[in-house]
Amino acid sequence: MINIRSVNKVYGEGPNAVTALRDINLEVPQGGIYGVVGRSGAGKSTLIRCVNMLETPTSGQVLVDGQDLTQLDEQGLRLARHQIGMIFQHFNLLSSRTVYDNIALPLELMKADSAQIKAAVEPLLELTGLTDKVDHYPSQLSGGQKQRVAIARALATKPKVLLSDEATSALDPHTTRSILELLKNINRELGITILLITHEMEVVKRICDRVALISDGSLIEEDEVGHFFTHPTTALGHEFVETALSQPLPEGLEDRLHANKAPSRRPVIRLTFSGDSVQAPLITQLARQFSVDVSILQAQVEHIQSQVLGRLLAELSGSDEAIAQAMTHLESQPVRLEVLGYVQPV
Ligand SMILES: Nc1ncnc2c1ncn2[C@@H]1O[C@H](COP(=O)(O)OP(=O)(O)OP(=O)(O)O)[C@@H](O)[C@H]1O
View (cartoon, helix red, strand yellow):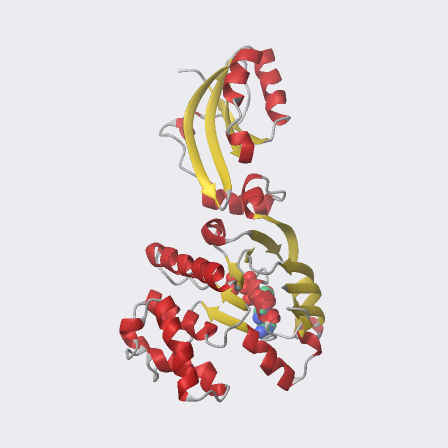
């Protein structure tokens, strides 16, 4: 649905030139919810703004529904943008217009008559839960309600694609959840493809099917969300995943953890399981096959999209040889093994 091919973007020229995107290739499938994550300044906004040509790529192609937007003139671009709605972190509503009139704006610009506008706006008010706010002005609305208006406005031209630029970053966690639910609902009910950028892995975890990670203008990782959470391949990917999954260590453990192995110290390991490996009797196997005792310190099971993700923190005890064999076995299994450190038995 969205094909980004070899896109580069350089701002400015000469010694002041800033390369914001480097040879980005990305394919967003039709009907999916696709997340792009990265640290501040990585190039996320530039990337999403290249998809509706708010920024023109320096080179490369951007195809939406098969049409290469980089080849269109102003008139062609104006028409193509009817297929692409966009929402922003700070809502960008017109303060002098009511909720109804904000949603109607893109239709007015398309010269729709009042009957057409009414027929389009009313179902959107219902979909976004704003029916009782129709005559309110933006100043009379909460942040979440303002974003709902912006979403309804973005859908007014019946786009095939919705772009979301940090749409929940200005909202509290509860409101964030309700807006993400709304986006998911829109994706499901209307079949709209959503491309969102965010610096919050929580957003990706909740609603995205696929995710891309960008760093310093380059795409460094791309995956299905459940797999990304269990098998990040880069150090940055790992860091992002941790922000969304990490739980505080059990009380007192941090103080007891040593970085180095010593004869009497026992390893504390973290196992991350996904899919079928959640069901696998790995722990009992360790005990039986390798004469290793496993004390579970913490356990957690989460559902990320269609994937089940389990995390287990455990202390292993047994002879050095048995522990080494058990670790080798774990490394060969479809789980992620991390050694957090070593503890002296209490
Ligand atoms: N209009 C511009 N002129 C010059 N440089 C720009 C412009 N817009 C962005 N940049 C630069 O391009 C790089 C990427 O910026 P961009 O805003 O796309 O990153 P981002 O990942 O969206 O960051 P943030 O999460 O902080 O918004 C940064 O180095 C930024 O300073």
